[in-house]
Figure 1: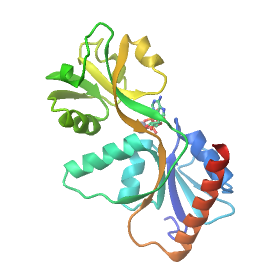
Figure 2 (figure 1 turned 60 degrees about the vertical axis):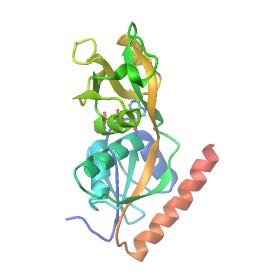
Figure 3 (figure 1 turned 45 degrees about the horizontal axis):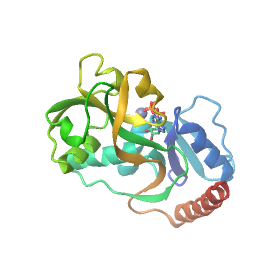
Length: 225
Ligand code: ATP
Ligand code: ZN
């Protein structure tokens, strides 16, 4: 069992947020050896344990109070929040700081030859996405009815495969869309990585450590701007 007096931070094990998260910890003075393929890494010089997991698990770990802090893309965080609310839960957490990496946008894209003059063009269409709740929130606001096709990978091939009329997926450069004969027609959410804290009681020692880390992060991020 883990030592509960140590601050537990969840980060993505391997993916687009891992290197930057790791760099951020290092620049805050946390000494950890993340070379080994281990789930938990112990900081050598501070009472901190780093939990390395799939990014999709991070919002839930924080909302369920299993870890104290987490670094996560706002897209994944917001989708989990909406998903839990849809199930009648009232998930809680605090955003400590929006970070300066992991920038991307969640966009609707359509085949190059499809006409698009606005969200109304999507009326009654089928849209492939890994973000059904964010998509629904956006299209509900636009009063557009649609059917979703939930895919957790290969979303961009769905139109070509005849599974959907459009997609709603993360974009950073647009190269993947282009390679699949799609064009971005509407941005529905802009995301960055963010640092969140669980709700509820926390010891003074842990809170002091969190405050110290935040001050350091502030300095590091400002220096990069
Ligand atoms: P995991 O194995 O942890 O589930 P993943 O494949 O779901 O990883 P990544 O592709 O590593 O996730 O992306 C993690 C996060 O990085 C995204 O949720 C998003 O916040 C951010 N991100 C930044 N740029 C992009 C991009 N171009 N495409 C996808 N995600 C991006
Ligand atoms: Zn993921």
